[in-house]
Length: 327
Image (cartoon, rainbow, N blue to C red; front, side, top):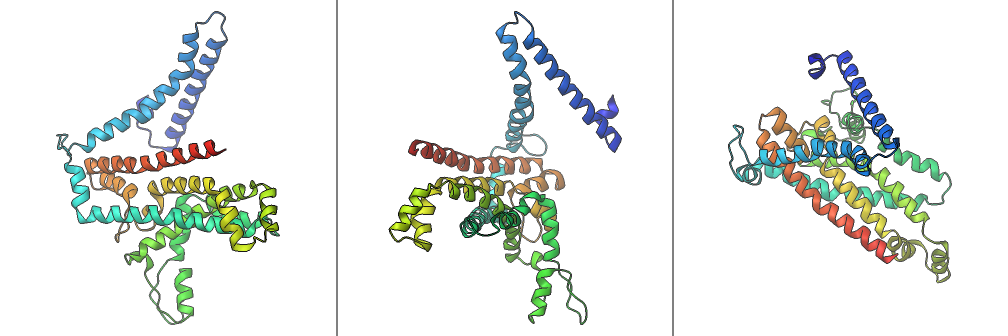
C-alpha cells in the first residue's frame, strides 16, 4: 500500500481516488445502517452523523491553521523568533510592494466589477435580447482563472515592431494600427498591475451583474410606477429608487468580490509569476513557502491574509443582519 501514499503515476492517483471515494461510501452506509437500527442510543446517531464532519474540520482546517500560526512565529530551523517574520513583511521593500499591490487589488476590483455589473444590469433590464446580453457578460465566470489568464496574456502579448509582421497580442496590434509603438504591458510597473486587475474585473463583473440583476427585478412594480407618476425617470430613477432598493445586494457583491480578490492567485501566477512588482499576498506566500524555501515567511503571509479577510466577513454579516431587521 506504500505506493498509494506516494502516488505519482496517473494510474496510482486514480486508484487512490477510487479507494478514498469507496471508503467514504462505506462510512456513510455504515452511519445510515446504524441510524436505522432499533433501540440505537441517540448519542450514537449524533456521533455517527457529526463525527466525520468534525474530523474533517479538525484535520483539514483547524489543525493546519494552528500549525500555520505556530510556523509564522518560527524560523526555518523551527526556533521561536516572535514577531520577526511579521516585522520582515512590513519593513522589507519587496513585501511592502506586495502589500501595496494587494491593497490596490482589493480596492479597485470590487469597485469596478460591481460598478460595471450594476450599470450593465440596469441598462439591459427588460431590454430586447436581455438573456443573450447577460449570457455574454456571465461567460467569463464559466472560465477557469488559469484559462482566463492565458487568454488575456495573449491579448497583452508583445512582439518587437517589424515591417510586415503583425503583433501577436490584440492590444498591441490595435496600438500599432493607430500609429503607436507596441508596449510590453506585463513587465512595465506600475501599469502592469492595472492590466492584471482588469482580468479579475472582467471575470467578476458577470457575477456582480447576475446578483444585481436579480435584485433589480425584485423591486416592487408599485414603487417604480409611483416614481414614474411623480415624473421620476432616467438617472434620478436610478439614484433615488433603484440604488437604495438594491443596496443590500450591492454590499453582498462588494464584500464577496473583495474576499475573492484577497485570495486570487492564478492570474498573477499565470501571467507574470509575481515578477515585475506584480506579486500579491496570495501569490507571495506560495512563492516564499515552495519556491524560496521560507515556510516561516509564507506562514506569516497566510496568517496576514486570514486577518485581512476577517473584517470583510464581519462587515458582510453585519450588513446582512441589518437588512433582515429592516425587513
